Amino acid sequence: MNMMTDAAHVAQHEDARAANVQPREYLSFQLGAEEYGIDILRVQEIRGYADATRIANAPSFIKGVLNLRGTIVPIIDLRMKFNLPDVKYDSQTVTIVLNIGNRVMGVVVDSVSDVIEFKPDQIREAPEFNATVDASHITGLGTMKNGDEERMLILLDIARLMSTADMGLVAGTVH
Image 1: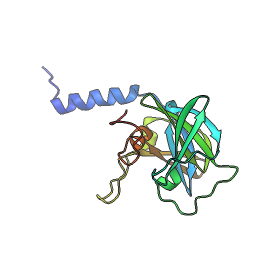
Image 2 (image 1 turned 90 degrees about the vertical axis):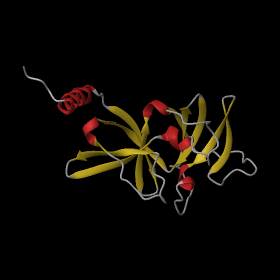
Image 3 (image 1 turned 135 degrees about the vertical axis):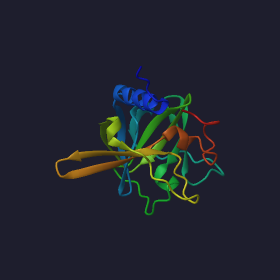
Image 4 (image 1 turned 180 degrees about the vertical axis):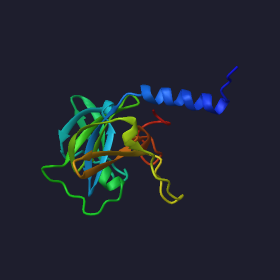
């Protein structure tokens, strides 16, 4: 009688499950010199940047609100949230409108590139940082080759980022 050890059985099950995992699509965008990606299923639309109506006592990274076809949408500047220097608004600056936890909100980014499909083997684990760096919203690093050039995206769990206490936009943790 050939009995598999529990560890071998679990490993075989995980391998079979990994083989069935479908590729995921991410919207890629620029913040400063870095390229990021968010799950395309969270994106409602992409709009050119427009000044938002400022809200009193809001943190500086919350630009204010916009009226989007009758819906009041909070606008967060991710460049300011991530403490990037020299935040400027130009013709490439866009607002990505997101659906998170039955809530519509917008994030301002430097520019949007394209939609990229990553297979599970193209996504690496997020690096671990010490306690002074909160990287809980980074789900991994998506890598792809284009000839001799390797492209790497920092993949964000945008729902987790928008659910942090300092945002005050979404109650609790959203997945």
